[in-house]
Amino acid sequence: MDDEDNIKNIAERLAAVRSKIPSTVKLLAVSKFHPKEAVLKAMECGQTAFGENRVQEAYEKFSDIHGAELHIIGHLQRNKVKKAVEVASVIESIDSIALLEEIEKQCAKMGKKIRVFFELHTGEESKTGFESEEALRNALVRCADLAHIEPAGFMTMAPNTDDTERIRASFRTLRTVSENLRREFPNFALTELSMGMSGDYEIAIAEGSTEVRIGTAIFGARHYD
Image (cartoon, rainbow, N blue to C red; front, side):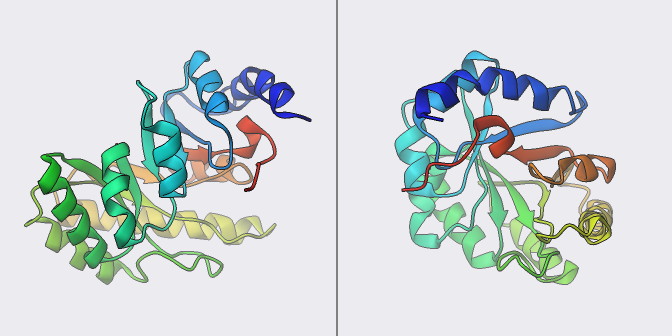
């Protein structure tokens, strides 16, 4: 299927995905490796929240798109933070205190606050994320002194497996950790749970996800460069 035909089918695929998601769960359309025209087509259909993994691609695609809420969902290197905070509304992949401090530095220069999610490593295939509840706790303690950071919730990636019980366990781990930390840090909202992708979002929703990150089921096969 060529790009033009693929874009024409976005409306139908988007409607099909929405029909399976409760109104209480946010749909983040993952547009990585797809052209700007695909994003605009999804926006025509009422989709406003998008996820991108790579900062340079996100910057080129979204810097002149108005009305979109962009989430950076991939591993964020500190040397890419400046461009990330310029274009994004949310950074979901916080995995170190050093990254938080760099985001604070760049946001302070711009006079901008940004919402962040803390990534917890719950699946052995994932190479990023905080390794423990204690590490997340230390990051939240540090946030008390970071005026431009707004802790909003948590995210994880389940293991890439057909074993639904392992996937479910991954999501349950994040939910339990989030509940613990919400009680410990009542001054932060920490209400968001970003978990679930095209292959496992129904399990994630059953386990308490407030946001699912779906790409292929909406945009079709990815176009790698």
